[in-house]
Amino acid sequence: MSIDFSATYRDGVLYPDAPLHLPNNITLEVRAVPKSETSLPDPFPATREEILAIRPKSPPFTADELRERIAKHAFSVGSLPDGFSRADIYSDHD
Image 1: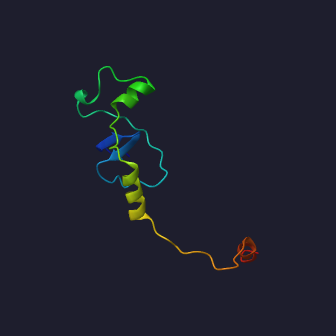
Image 2: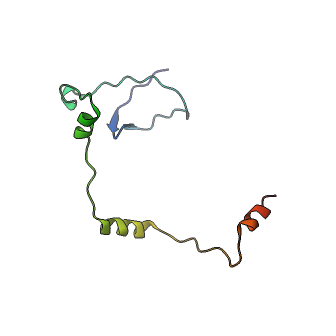
Image 3: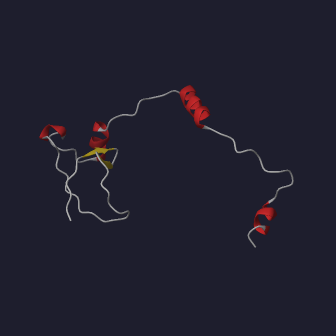
């Protein structure tokens, strides 16, 4: 079986442009061919530092923006009942 697909390589991961409909944990042999030769620097980077230099940078954000993001997505599940102990957890699994 052979399939051809387009994908984007970002941050060390290949992202297919469309679902591949393959079973989980299947082993594949992959041959990467850039769509255009201009997409790769010439010569292709060989060291970690060269690769890091061409990686897209994440947008910077401040500590206040981080707090806002955490507050936006955080939720509370409440607290444990009074008198609850580790023994209560273990007694439920004996």
